[in-house]
Length: 438
Ligand SMILES: *Cc1c(COP(=O)(O)O)cnc(C)c1O
Image (cartoon, rainbow, N blue to C red; front, side):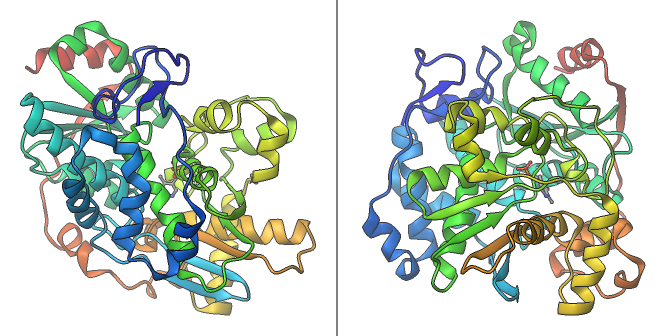
């Protein structure tokens, strides 16, 4: 498979190059030159196939010759070494729990996949690789953990001052070794801007082999397709399946839409957001107007200019609003609605949603209500993080009910030293720091 940038389909590059570059030099995102179509037999056999077989089959065409087949199997096995339970909440609503990885959020999958790919490429190019990443919380934690002590790779994480939870901060700042964290006086969009500018900066690129571990990187983005295939495999009788994906940067939902384009029979998707509602407004008024970011309790989605949306709009849907509206619904929800539903679902069904999953659940409820739903649709929402990660934001009555997962122990129990370097949100300031440190 070759990749092109969204702006230019003349320069084609390999998977390896797309992963190492992160963002294209023209400032736009990389996308596969074409989307491979799966054969019907594979879809039919999904329930019988093993998870690792399924994932290898899906991802292989996207990697092409960049990584040998036998090694792809290793990557998949290392990436998917934890469970992805699908549970029925009530009626025809199911949850796919994606938070059983080491940092308790779904981003572990993409990050671990990318870390394995980069480790392979490092052995080939033998040059130190620097990963520059902006985070609204969970990416940073997953990246720090996924790349910790990987030879030949260092990670620089930018996170917004006051924009992430205390646990997320601990997960990012307490590792040390090859993981460096910078607290930026600003919001997530400021952090993302610094990262984007760094990639376009000639002086920086001269000194560093720089790549990004945000969902703009194809190695982070593509393995997220696995979730949709796994849910489809697991759910009994998956005719008329829909997904609700709580969305911030729209990487996860974009991977879902890709799997549908590859031939996975999904009727449509819901991408609910918090009050940072650029996409719900876009689908309604057909105008793309990002507003300043507002803080919410689902803070991993406090993003107003979702950087994966061009992949959906320009690439998958060729700027065709009617086609897009057939496959994608998007609604916004307030913190009040989110907290209310967390309490209600707990009281009625004894299931504890985290604020992000709660937005996913709300998306399904809203669609069903709007459409006066009485059909045979089965709806899966993605539970993207464990509620313990957002304990400060959970309703009081629930805080003692949440069971601390064992893999969190290290971060909660040990009093690890946090290494914090604080910086303004001025790009030039960051640039001088970066150029002087080596
Ligand atoms: C990152 C994240 C999201 C949003 O995913 P996108 O791919 O950025 O849309 C939702 N929930 C949680 C817990 C996250 O960490």
